[in-house]
Structures are given as C-alpha cells and as structure tokens.
Amino acid sequence: MHGLSHLQTGSTLEALTQATIILILAVAIVISNLIVVATYLNFKGPHEVINYYLLSLAVADLLCGLFIVSLSVYPAFSGEWIYGDVVCRMMGYLEVTLWSISVYTFMWISVDRYLAVRKPLRYETIQTKTRCQCWMAFTWISAAMLCCPPLLGYNEANYSKTTNICMLEWGNMAAYSATLAILVLGPSVISIVYNYGYIFTMMRKVRSGAPIHDKEYATALAENLANPSHCMSFALVFSFWISWAPYIGLRIYELVTGETIDNPLLHFGAVWIGILNSFWKIIIMTSMSQQFRLLVRLLFLTICCKTKGRLQAELIGLDPDD
Image: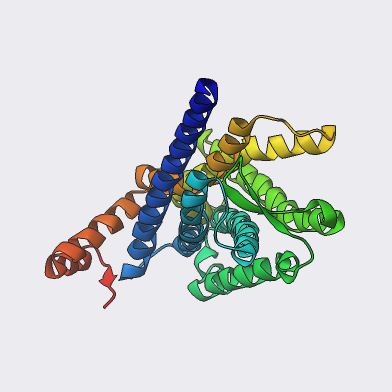
C-alpha cells in the first residue's frame, strides 16, 4: 500500500509539473505574441514589407497559444481529455494548419530577403504592401484547404497522455500525409536553403571587396545587405527548425524502425520544445531589430500616455493608427 501511495504521489507530482510548464508556456506565448501583433498594428508608416510576414507569424503563434497550448493545461493535470472529440479533432487540424502557415511564411520571408539582395534597385516596386498581403492571404487559405481532409472525418484525433495534446492519426492516410509533407516542406525548404545561401554568398562577396562594375547597384546592394532584417529573419528560421528538430527526428526514427520509443518524458519534451518556438520569436526580434524595439517602446508610450506616444512617433516619421 505504501508503494502504491508513493507511486500515485509521484504520478500526481509529474502531472502537476507538466501542467505548470504548459500553463507558463501558454501565458508566455499569448502575451508575447499579443505584444508583437499590437506593435505592428498600432502604427502606420514606413514599415518594411517583412513586418507583414512577421505579423502573420505572430498571429499564427497567438492562435497556437490560445487554442492549443491553453486547452492542454487542464488535461495535463487531470490525465484525460474533457473537451470532446470535436474539439480534439479541431485542435489536431489547427496544429497542422498553423505549422504549415509558419513554414510557408518563412519561405516568403526568404524570398523577400532574396529579392532585396538580388534586385536592390527594383525591390520596392516588386515587393509592395498589397502584393505581400495577397501572398499572406493566399498562404492562410491554401494551408487551411490543404490540411482540411482530416477535419472532414477521414482520420481520427486522439489525446496523447504522454504529450498532453490532441494529435491527428496520420497512419491510415499515408498517401495524403506524404503528399501534404511534400507540398509544405518541398518548396519551403528548397527556397529557404537557396535564398539564404545566395544572401550569405553576396555578403561574403561584398565584404571581400570583390569588384562590382555598376556603382549604383553596388551602393544599393551594400545598403540592403547592411539591413539587420537578413540576419534576424535567418535566426527566426533557424530557431524554428532547431526547435522542431527533436520531434521530427523522433518521428522519423519511429517511422523508419517501426518501433515506438517507450519514454513519455522524451515525447513530452520533443513536442513542447517545438511549441516553445512560438515564444522565442519575440526574443530574437527584440535582440536583433532596432526598429522592432523602437516600435515596442512607442506602443507602450502610446498606452501609458497617448499624447507622448504620438509625439514620439511623429519625431521619427511614424503615423500612429487611431
């Protein structure tokens, strides 16, 4: 009896610890991405086009925090899913959709940075605000449609007690799963690798003093390469894939070997390290983007004292949104 009681206490402590971790993560993700969304929506003015892509990422992360992470807190403590099969299926669908949106958005960010370096003289006419917004709308709609078959009842979503999250069962839809992976990862990974490879190659070329005969092009190229958005966007992409690498590696290993690793802590850690990526973005943006730090400062100035915030914005050429 004493051994059974000790086991139950240990199990309860583990459940409480996991629920606490998920709760802290939910609060951090929601608050941090609310700040990012409010920061970019609060002002109109000379924003870089990349900011609209970053806004899209923040919205996806905010939805993840509100509807995936938050709903996992109580089940993590109780050990059972209490919200019903429909909500479980919706959560599984939302996970895949938001993950696909993030991957596609990183692809568009890499394309945007590539065009800024490849065509510095025509970049502003190629990458307009309207065109960027159209690409984002297309990304959200296409990702929602690509991921919708599981939502229509073609496969089930099950609550995993090891990861404390609802996940879709992809095993009975192998052909669809493979096609979805190719459509999402194929163009995205190829674009990201090629575009950032070109950007860093040009950076090395300019730093080495290699001659560029067109002086106007050389000046514009040097100015664009000096933009910290290149390194910041690469850091965002890198942190995303590093965060999800443990889970992807674990799933590939289990798929190839055909055996499931019986280590609940490993599965829990792999999934939630990946989801933690939704919080890292604000840290990277704050540390690497002076413009973002300024916009956040103006946001809080506007909240605390609207007149002072407006004055500060006017001094730097920004137009606060009413």
